[in-house]
Length: 111
Image (cartoon, rainbow, N blue to C red; front, side):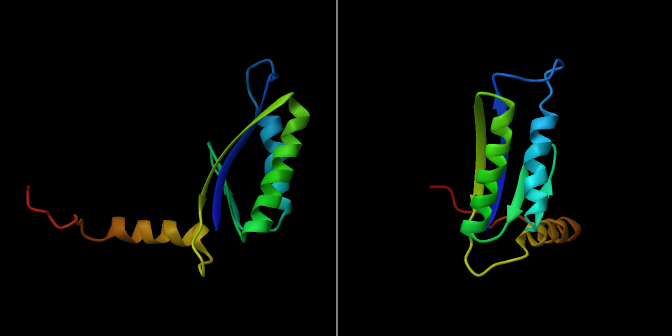
């Protein structure tokens, strides 16, 4: 499964409104997990089985909790049995489609 998540404290922040130190605490946990992961400007995506992924999300959320009295957690999961390597595989298939000829779904007749 892939889980994309964003976690941040609320109630406190740096003088400039940045949350980078709190987010860094979460990302350190993700990277130390050894699971495949990718962080971009909005989310961190992690790949693994249900129990190991959610254990990492829980630990990352708890780490961010040290930065404020409340924590906001947003997540999206792609649960697809029997698949692995999707952290990069999905992007590779998209890039291949972009490099190929443009296609569109078959037109359906109007009612």
